[in-house]
Length: 325
Image (cartoon, rainbow, N blue to C red):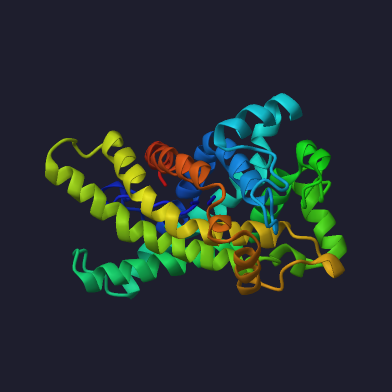
């Protein structure tokens, strides 16, 4: 995610369609497709973030179980010791997750705003309406995309380096790919296994949606008011990177907890009973710093992913419009 929740500008609303249902489906499909395409470029940062968040889990010393020194070291070690394609582990489920997560969010968000009587203003009350709509639509998207996010995390956590170093999650799940992972989880745990860890994913997405909606537009308007940039890709990128400092800082603790819940062993070897237990145990064992593991990779991914989503969404939307959708 990873911040997987993307805020799109109001002036990029899709063109009018023949019915509300058709407009909703167009929003979902075009938004989901755009987010999936952006994932191709942002996924390497997601792989690195996942590895950094899991290394040294439940370790009292920062050096214990440490495989990577940081963002750059991970980017160098992963392809060198696991092959070039390792930096794109979990890409397919990541793209599917992005499609359902941001597709649902983009399609449901405008509807929820209307139900909450959004008036388009920047008043505190209306900002709260937008935050509520964003958090709710994000939570719905997180539920729908949960099985794919789980498999993505587990595939990205599979590491020969971690296995050799004896870290906690060393090659714990041996999945050949997305379908194999989903099938194995279903055989071992039933359909409920697909949604294990969702209690950590929903708060993560709600916090990410709310913080992004509360900061992105404010930062963008401030940049435009200063007159340094015009409303365009560079402005969107700058706004994402500035607001991303706030979003990443607020969201990263929830992201760490979500990743650990999705990748933890099941049955007798289970480590956490839920998100609250994970927060408490992480704080006791690793201190405050444990909640900010992978922060740099998380932040470095946020701006480019947001802007690429904007660019791809506009192109996909225009293409859909040409075909009468």
